[in-house]
Every structure is written in structure tokens, then in C-alpha cells.
Image (cartoon, rainbow, N blue to C red):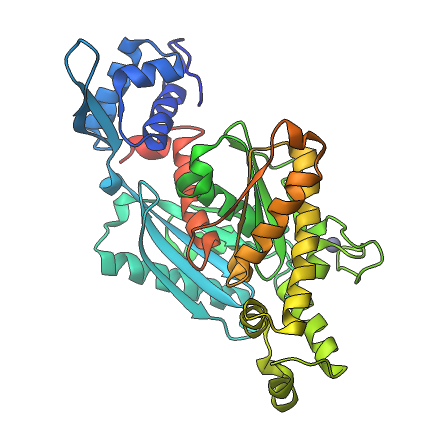
Length: 410
Ligand SMILES: [Zn+2]
């Protein structure tokens, strides 16, 4: 939990310290906030009164108290403000609208026609987001902003998507500026893995822990790191690139220049390529006939479903991928010594338990510190697209964390 300071000049910082503790708790009293943050009871009381007057916090119920009068509990008012999250995935456009507690109110997903000009796609995204807000009846002044999750690498300070893999026309696209022009709200961009990690911190498994890593398996493989309640981005905002940890020194070449990276061995494209190669050799499989008739239909989803049903070829490939991911998890445990590793992203659908169980097995037997503590593995609960939800959470996270300027406008 964050600590406050009782110096008079840091009011907005203290407002956020108080807000963070109210958001993280499921009902908390003024006395508990003071105990958690180190702020005086009087400071907490003044801040809470102001937040209640602004409609950001509401009193709800009461807690029994030892000896004294019952303590009034405080919660965030979910309807105080809203945020939009948009995920520009290489193969689709996902978006969500969330309330102030990060709860999803509406979502939409659209396929992207290949070769669509970036600005046309951004305009399409803006139009869809505005329709979602209109359908929900949310007035513009209640919208804190828009979070855009994009495949990395990105330049967050300039709002640029640099050169994402599998997106030839997306070199140095000023996505922040273009989206702001089309949608008329402030836009924050982040890479999709960091956005999904922030979503976990906000409303997923990361809520209850200050130190965790997030392994994101989407079209590519990425990651996010939370240390002491803060996302750790690194000096060039590119920390957590777990997809480029080498797990097979002589493995397939990766676009980053290495061989045998997690992404080169475990991404949906790598899995499909390996299964197709084995089917082309005539290996016995439930997928063999389907492959002969229409190779394109043996896609990542078909392979994952076959693996769950113990198809020989599909299961062997997925089991090998699970081992690579477990090797990666051991490296993460040794490097970061965090409490929890969350796995998420669209590519874990159907096979998440296979991956989790292999990671758990390796984590119990291989990291140096395993006898002191074993890093747990959890499967993200974020349905479909954690990155879109995460992008919306990014807006809330930014509004709560560095300054209260956004909120005090509400
Ligand atoms: Zn690589």
C-alpha cells in the first residue's frame, strides 16, 4: 500500500493515496485509511469530505468497531466517471467502456480488413467508441479519456506506434494525435501487454498483490511487470519483453534477430507452422484429413481444441510449447522474485490449464529461491481481450496515480 505524507504542499498526491486505498479495498473506513497510509485522521477526513462532495467517493454501510460507534465504510462511486479502452490488435479491433471501478459496461469486436490504411482504421475505432458511449447514455464530460493498446514497440512519450510485427504500414504512426483528433478525448497509448497487466492490477488477479509479472500471449508474446505497486517500464519503456527470452538456442529465427525466442517458439503462428509441418509428414492425427482438404482451416484454435482432446500431434506440440513457457516462467522467477505470474491473452484460450500446470511444475522444482517461496501461476479472468480492458484501466490508473487533475474536474 502507498504511504502518504502530511506535508501541506502535496495535497493532490495525498488525494490519490486515499483514492488508491479506497479503490483497492472492498469498503474501508477513514480510520483504516489513516492506518494504511500514515496520514493523520484529520487529513484523511478533509480529503474524504472533498471526494464525497465531488461525487467520486460515497459512503456505503458501516463496519462494527471494537467498543466505539460503528465506522462508516467508503467506496468509489462507479458512476463518477468512465473510460474507453481500444485494442488495435493486428487481426481485429476490440473496445470496452468501463466505469470508475474498472467494471466493463459494454464491449465490441470487429475484424479488420487487411491493408486498411492506419488513419481509416483509427477513424473507424473512434466512430465505434463514440457509438458505444452514446448507446450507454454517458455524457462526454463524464469520460476521463481513452486508452489505446497497440502492439509494441511504441514510443509512449510521442504517442507513436513504431514498427509492430505483421503490420507493414504501421511505421511511426502518430496514433495518439490521430485518435484524439477523431474522438475528441485525451488519449493514452501503451503496448498491449503492459495495458493487459494494468488491467490485471486494476480488476484482476493483480489486485491483491503488489508484485507480479504478466505473460501476455496474443498474436505475439509480451509481458508486464508490477513491482511495489508500480508498473516497471524500464529506461526506454521496453521492460517485460518476455517474448524475446531465448528458450531454444538453436530454435527458429525471430524477427528481433535472435533464435528460439519464446515468441518464435510459442506464438500462434509458430504453433500452426509446427503442426502443419508434422501433418505434412503424414503423422497420425485427427486433424490429418482436415489438413488434406483445407490446410488453412487447421488454425490455432483448431489445434488447441485438438490438444485438449489428446490428439497426438496437436498435444505433443502444445506440451512442448508449455515446457518452453515453463522455462520462461523459471527465468522470470529467478530474475524478479515476484509473488505471482498471471498468464493471459487470446492465445491461451482452451490450453491455459495445460500451460499453467507445466509452469507450476517447473516453478516448484527449478528456481533457486523455491524453498523460500514458490511463484504462483494464475490464469487471467479477463474474457476475450484483456488488452482492451487494460487500456481502459490505464486511463483510470493514470487518473488515480500521478495527479488528481482529471478527477477534480469531474
Ligand atoms: Zn525474438
